[in-house]
Length: 201
Figure 1: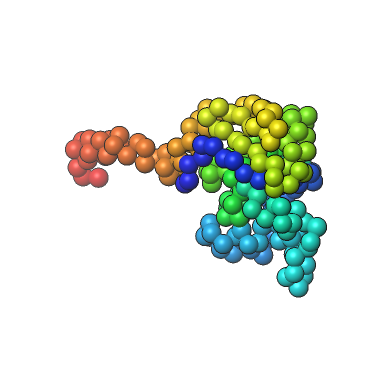
Figure 2: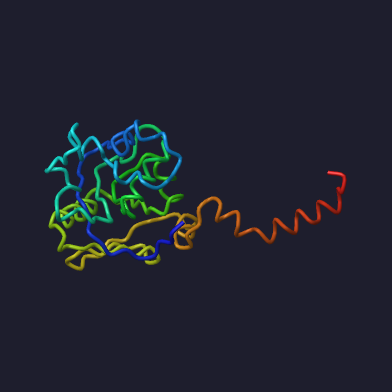
């Protein structure tokens, strides 16, 4: 998993509330078990018409936001079904950070397993981020995970809370497999001792 330390990028404003996982990646794209390729269908029903042409007023289709790496969203982002394809699609598109006032629990947890930083802010601070994002591509937001801070384009600094364990995992690029591999030496020692104690197993 890619490490997350600092991110300076364009933030796309998406003030809708209750954006569910079916809106993030519709069910017809769930046949794959690959984590790549889903970015093309991120927010598919909001991004594209039935004939495949782009819906011009959708935020990620606007020139200022096509290269967005940060999403500032409304309340209860990632609700609905527990599909891990949702953070896969977000990461594959190139978005590394989502800012909201709240997230659905399963989606929130899945973000950390896929190198995405979900930041929970009080509404007034989220609105500052939203207003900054609405300025367009010239207003870049900087996220510093180590300092747990967001710096807006006008220099305003907002701090956020984060569980230390999840912070450690993102800073070091550790998903569940990576966490296990950190203990590889201890696992090898245990297995060697177990083999000696129970050679018949």
